[in-house]
Length: 305
Image 1 (cartoon, rainbow, N blue to C red):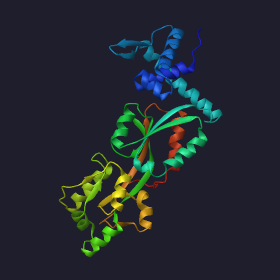
Image 2 (image 1 turned 30 degrees about the horizontal axis):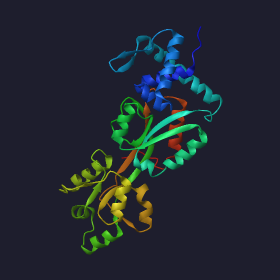
Image 3 (image 1 turned 180 degrees about the vertical axis):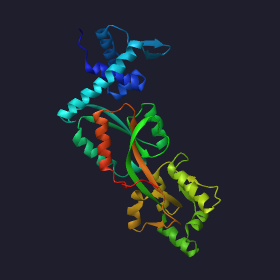
Image 4 (image 1 turned 90 degrees about the horizontal axis):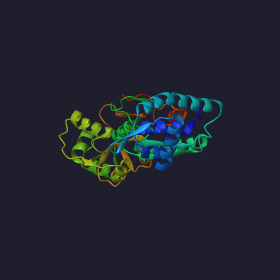
């Protein structure tokens, strides 16, 4: 009986999950020729073709699909066995993280520091983007884990809570002085008079801002869009408008007196965050990252309203 290298099986399952040899090569931190060589060695060992060419694409054959189905639980069990008796120190590979800007600007550095100690040989590829983009990338297999605002758009995946953040309306101290001189003090008055800044229409904050307009009966057609929370904070600090922002990102500016929090009528909105990973991605490394992220997160530990 020919011996089968577990790396060959890992490569096969990676191609099946990501869809192409090139995507598997990027994920496994190697080259496409190396991936092709592994599959050729595996085909020689099992004695059947695992892929067939259809047009410009390589697709799994019937024996190839069966081998993937049989191999995936075996590989998962082997990884769980190794980590159960040892540690993550010997684990190697690349884990691709998609994170929201609020995560990136708050506790992400602390998470990476913690993960570096636990799994020093793992490389991380981190992309910062909008929740809608992370949902698509997770579905397409372009990232392994997503950390962002909770929406109803995640389907067929596992997810866990990272906590929630309070959102507060803020303006610069100078703009607040100008508003006071103009006897413009309430949130409805301020929103009707001064420029408002928001993330794009696909962002949860945008929907919360427009919902506030509707709730307060403000007929406002003009809304400035900026693709970065960090950029919006700088614009607001300059006195060029008002925005609804996560308190975790602006609290320091409020304490220093550079920003002024505007009291809203009623309760301040909250934004819940989750960590999500694709169904079937139950490897010990993924689980460990999920658990560590939940432990490191500095978001509030109560559900969003």
